[in-house]
Length: 349
Image 1 (spheres, rainbow, N blue to C red):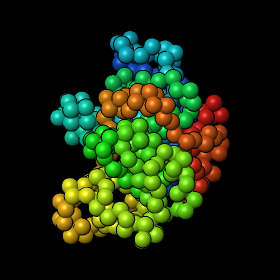
Image 2: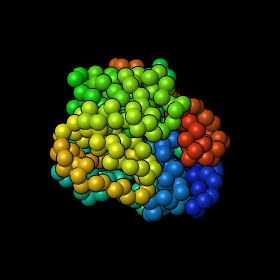
Image 3: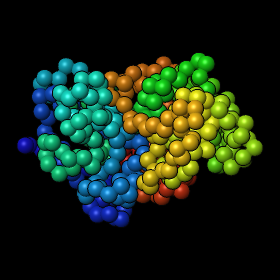
Image 4: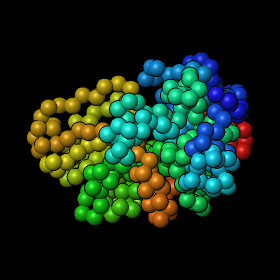
């Protein structure tokens, strides 16, 4: 297959700092869209992948799956995009195209194996897909998104992962007027969950281990904020909530949050702790409670989320950085030193 080259930032081996490199992109297939990458968000899962926390990282690796750009070329059968339009690519760039999950607009659950925007087997070039820490990206039009013209365009890039990761479960578990929603953790995911849940009309209570984030939760729109180490405050919420989004990506005790649910309530995990979590049997059978998980969303739902966030003027609280600052940004992310999302200005590459 014919290829083109693109500048990128990545690493060849585990533990090697990210640095400038040259990668191959496929030459356009008839239904492909090429875009110049303008901004790319940094997600906690990027950090997990470059550190090989889950095992199976394919090196060399170029991270990035919150990819916002402008269309530069289209294949001769493309009907959905035109040169010059804003576009986005999130986590999904391919799937089998015919399984039950695909037919239900749930491409992320493809039974034959979904292709992710980086560190996933590349069905066209072999090896692994390379992500958005690069000057260009090529994607089939079915998996590319129409990006609304947000006033703060860079701050909209994290919607392509962080936004859909919390929007999808909030919608699936019917967050809205009359519902009391809890949000565990205020980071890249948690701060987006606050904004989106409030825009849906829910009452929002945030639980955090950080005293400094209690007031910040209210700035972001939360109705209530609780320091989770304060047992007296926590006890006030026993059996009070319909639904809790758990955004924590480290080992933690979910049982104390199951106790805050009303009967038939659900704690939904969207964080990615590298270690297993223990769930006490009595904490779920008493009250018919559920401990569930959710993983991004399909392409149609992601487009719906982008339109919803544009309508409600929702973007991520972002720190825009140059590509040359990316290794420092990953170090700060590991320490939780960001409010609340790093976004790379790709003009710096």
